[in-house]
Image: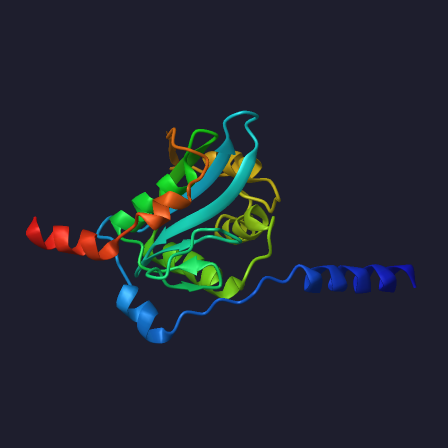
Length: 207
């Protein structure tokens, strides 16, 4: 009876934590699709508190047949950037730059870890991200680590802690690392308010 009660309690907990589903229409996703011409690559982002070193958020950029960001339970939202259940599409260099600057500010920096992988590995990770479903709050590292644990068995294990995941990923052969520090106000909403993809597109045609 005790085991049954625990199973029921766990199920109710998961139902209570269910995140709302976001599903951009097919035409928006198709129009936004972007394939970066660099190598097939995984990029792990870890947002770290500058005061105490704790992790606040984890996400994963995947460059395969197209480039997307798996941003579980993330707050990066813009009407011109389509999303399907925490997978953000259309990650051009400009969007990638806006994404990282959205998270880096005077109290947080971004630990950026990259590894070049085979096209098959990139597609495996992309399928896992697209099939994962909407992630509830505080489960960002848990969801990302579950995907990476399947992609790198025996090298990455599941965890709820962003910094622990980053430390594990750092030990995977081939991973390189850098850190992004910026000193803007903690009100990072202005980064998205100032994002104007139409102006970016016009500037690109002039260069």
